[in-house]
Image (cartoon, rainbow, N blue to C red; front, side):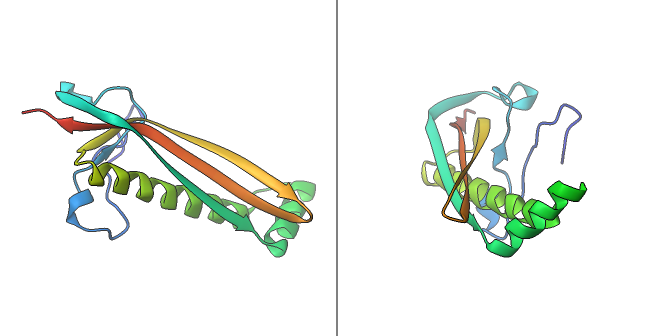
Length: 130
């Protein structure tokens, strides 16, 4: 479910079990619907993926001729999904019901003909209060 304001609510995981079906990840600093919660702690996850020579070559062609690089987009999607899955796992391990104020920071490391994409996801793990 994607709300009008861009807040993702009740995200389903990639087959990680029923425990995630109600876990909320949101970029908002508060939960929707005025839900009461207590802050557990700041959590982070990191993910790194290499861009191989062929992906770099085809991405370079897309840069030169214009257009989108489907190879690069696929890598970025995989990187994001893996990093958010790890963030959900960190939250679950703490007994959190949600992660608010989620932020994604991408970086690229390159040298000697190799490139690596690095993503850090951070947010505040919270527990619902009845």
